[in-house]
Length: 254
Image (cartoon, rainbow, N blue to C red; front, side):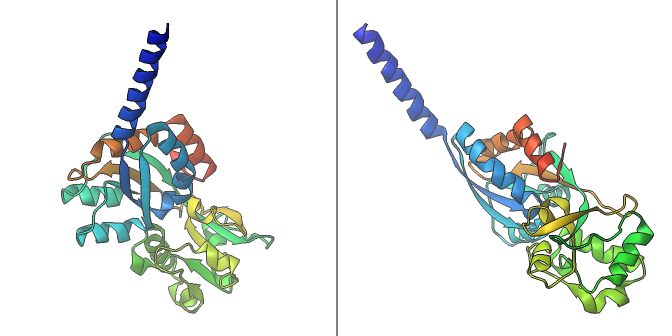
């Protein structure tokens, strides 16, 4: 019996050693659009796979620019548009399961403040015109919501009226933080981003006719030695546990 237990213990130790040997340190470039969800999921992924994630957060556009400039990561978690750009240049690959979630744009106000009416396109426009200050991502930084909102404001014909009362967070930052600090009355950005900030209340998503859906996708750097570990992350992003977190964080699972 002693020999049996000894062999079992030895087998277990080999299994642990094999698991440790197969564990990977995975460098990830990820869009801030899914930051709150991915930060919540990271410990579970690491526990289940043994892989360690080291994540760099920024807008997808900023990360694509950095990769085009010579930087790289093992795994890219970006907007679908951003990942497609890297795939076209041969710097990323994407399987049929690359897309994992999507989100729209929403508005927040400071916690406890009155919530304006944005139930219709006209009501949304009127709210922007009445606001003392409005915050959204700087379109010059390339963030999907900032670019879209700037174009929407121009399309509504109120760009001139909003010019002097528009605030932008630092590049890659969250517009909702400007509401918390009192620098802005309203903030408009991707729903999972603004709802992740403490000290704000959700007004709601933009009217359906004005809203814009951003889709998120993930894929490996084919030149990286950690492509398999990245594929494990992509698979995990489709798991029931991940989908539950996405829903709680303002994302719609794929």
